[in-house]
Amino acid sequence: MILQMNQYAAKAHRTDFIGYVQSKLFDFFQENRHVQKNLQDIADEESEAVDAAYIKATCNEYDLPCLEFSVHAPDHE
View 1 (cartoon, rainbow, N blue to C red):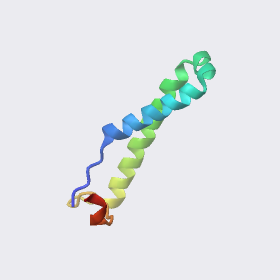
View 2: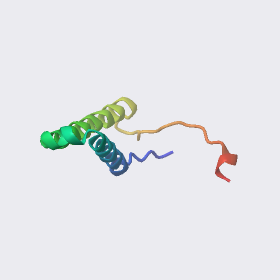
View 3: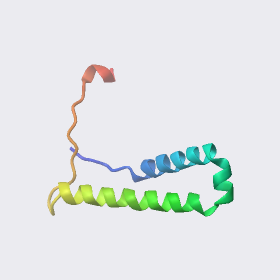
View 4: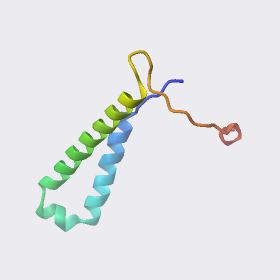
């Protein structure tokens, strides 16, 4: 089994979430324009740290990361 960490999709989700928060707190983000960039940078750094920790805990020099999950075939018909 091969695990693909889709970092592009994860970043798009984080950006969308921060955009949603920005739309709900419009006045705050208008007064503090640097906050959105700071939030995005912090979220990206945290994501990279979580990915690195997962790979370090799951892999060694010869193994690739692997997620185990069950698949119910009728759900995909």
